[in-house]
Length: 448
Ligand code: BES
Ligand code: ZN
Ligand code: ZN
Image 1 (cartoon, helix red, strand yellow):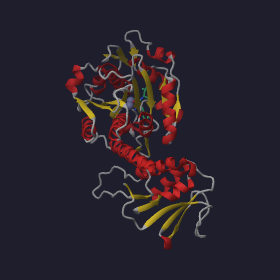
Image 2 (cartoon, protein in one colour; image 1 turned 90 degrees about the vertical axis):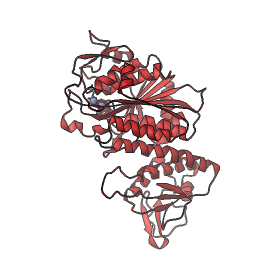
Image 3 (cartoon, protein in one colour; image 1 turned 180 degrees about the vertical axis):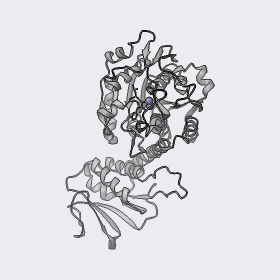
């Protein structure tokens, strides 16, 4: 938890460099912490020229990782070091303290209590505005992370839908719609239903709408919400099934982004569509070579039941185009193993034919310290997905060449010429078995 100018704690964290008047006992090496116990102060030393925000992020993360106490943060001392980037450094301090200070989801008999970080600074309009918008944003980053971390027996499609809609109802200005199985059937979301076919848990679609400025083009955020991906009849080998509870990360992130925008009263026009189901085996589960009609009318041959994300997203994108009248669509999905091979945990893969959208996203990502890397999206990738004689599309192309791009091309065709951007977060959604709500901060900065 973070607070500002609250009652003070015993211990204070303070940044220093060679220009500061400091105790000679302080170790003068960049990134090193020295505790001077008589002063009840922990000093963090910076090189004189250092104004690197990533370093600040790294040092603070390390500190919070080992700190056992409630602590004051002497914000002014950090702003003195980040002279030309005061406001960015302030944002980084807030983000890292809220993120790293948020305890892991747990179901232990005796849960740990969150540590408090009390920010001490001289109030100005600029700093207070940054405080307000960043703390709201981080509230929803941590909300999304807690959803991601739910074990799959608790975080079912139905439960995730409930938690998202309950939270959204606490935010003024959001219209909440939850579609149950009957309504999903009535909408002809054949692809979502085909993925859900093997499950005893019903699917859900959660739509959140927020209009902060009706004149702005409408952006719809679609999220992959597979509460557990076993692979279906193309069953994953057991070592590949680990972590598949995180396959709902896109839905958690996209829904939480809208809530953060609405709560901070951003001047934007946005909606989110969370496509929720698990992907299981069982007597009713979809068989390979089945041909399924999508909501859009196009037919899809299911050549691999483990390529389920693109199926549920396709119907979500059609809903965004047809029912929500989107001007542009962005989706986030833990979509392909191929992007993990290409970019690892370091970058989110971005696919779009629209340079302008890519430029906006990249710019926002630099402020959020989240790394993105643009990937190719060609008509050849679509053609590979159309190589099936008896349906309009296949959901899995056998050669697996450029597997992340062919998956993106499959989604792109459902956007029906609307501006479209796909974020493949398969490698970045979680780290050390813990959700990161990756891209939420970037999308928030981009859309606000
Ligand atoms: N959820 C997986 C992708 C994934 C892999 C996420 C690793 C996180 C870590 C997705 O549904 C999947 O299984 N994709 C297949 C597609 C293939 C069958 C065309 C893949 O990438 O192997
Ligand atoms: Zn899969
Ligand atoms: Zn999946």
